[in-house]
Image (cartoon, rainbow, N blue to C red; front, side):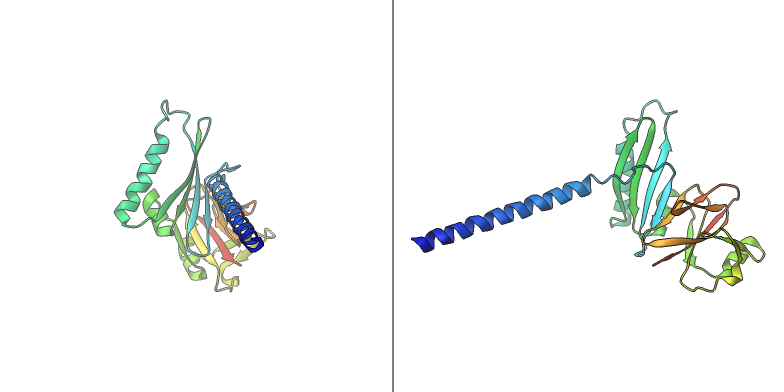
Length: 210
């Protein structure tokens, strides 16, 4: 009888442990779902990850639009339509957030090509080579060191692991787990990223992953 009670007690304890574990997992999932990707973001923002994926936070002022009720459904439809045409889910809508007449979307892309196709952009990402940058400028290019603000010639940068992003839209560029190292043309260091300041028709950012 004592053995039976002990066995019963063990079963109850195991069930309780499983219940608490399930509750903890559910709580973590809910926290994940409630993650506010758009919090405090005021500029269009694009973050690169070492696996090639991209997180875009788009900030759109819709104050001139009278009816905004269907915007969320429209974005979801566009994402679903793109994925269906691709035959695989390359885009994930993580968040749609309304703040007055400002709307923000957090969208994860599998790669830059997908980001370009979905948005109709022509951003380019490649391994940095000084001759490629010089070809853009038509002369020996000069960059700004994002750490100390000093200028440096393109040929002085010898690292073979830097990524070079060229883009022509107003975005704040970041590298998750990485660092912005140099900016050129219409890009300038801004916080932990680099912002296109629209003074030139093209912005250049060099970054690396740690």
